[in-house]
Amino acid sequence: MKAELVDQAAEKAAELNIDIPSLINLVSKRVRQLNAGRPALVDRRPGMRDADVALTEIIQGKIKPSDIDDA
Image (cartoon, rainbow, N blue to C red; front, side):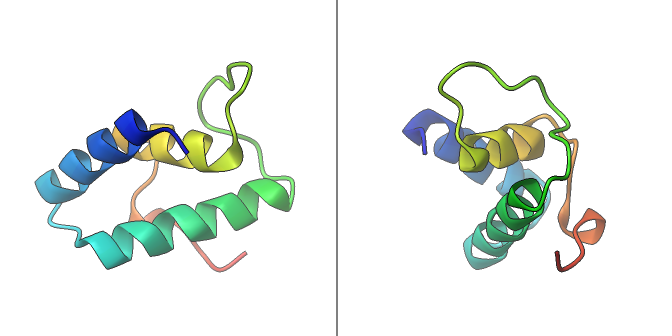
């Protein structure tokens, strides 16, 4: 997981009044969805892991806690 993405996602979470434990849960659930075969909502660049994809989706506003169901 790239540190700069974590920092940017934490800033976005603060803007949305999402606490850090909820952000962690959101990333975790999204990673499980990606592992289960759901498509990424952002372009996956070489070297991006599923956690990086999830963080990028959060940063870009593509997902929020209400969008994630248990996968």
